[in-house]
Length: 292
Image 1 (cartoon, rainbow, N blue to C red):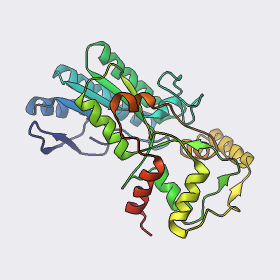
Image 2: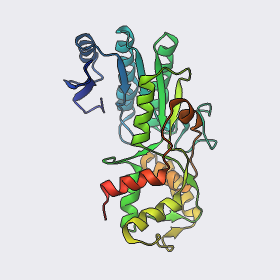
Image 3: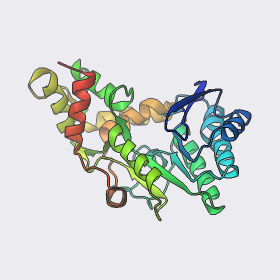
Image 4: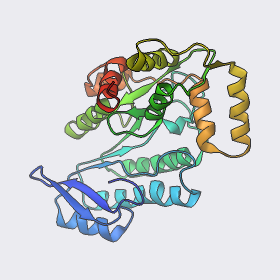
């Protein structure tokens, strides 16, 4: 199941074959009919409007919060074995108050998307208290073939030498779609006492190092040193975008100019996720989507 404007839902039948249901996942009648007609035992809820500034407050509420509540209600009433909700580390804010952020770090909804995910998590936790076997996964910014988020934009800007990076380097943390899929698969196959997990690559990486490595992929040399700006330029730009309420560009400035990384040891220890470094997984992503 995907976003608000997607009219197709996907599910696996008991035989393991894929089936498609025409409709919108936020419509209760569609969900009720689907749960009654198919023996759905596991739910992995990925549908959302994603990213600050990509929708109105009402749309974020309708899809990310009310849609999640509708799906939870049907899952609960039909006694599913397991419900996995894909949230976001954005519940800590674009940049968490403390690094590394962990599952006990205070939540901070600094844009409409993040606030909607916090609200949706509260609904999930309410159903856990009612007895639903549910889990919350908070993925980092993802990268992988076909993705169109921050890493894709970063690669395109580096390739065109249009990225201005800050003078100070700092660590950032990403997650490959393969690692995220492993997390979901592990939670589907085995119950866990812990209910909230952070979906991340095994360790953070240097932003400047990643930029240099992307540039090396295309040109066999580091990113040009002259394409740097003093840190204060990013601070001014961030303040300007925040003052005019531009959530998308405020987030981009923050992600480029501040450190953001997370504690994910429990995820690897409890879920037996394959600890592949970002550089190795990102290299495959570059080869697939950006061949030289």
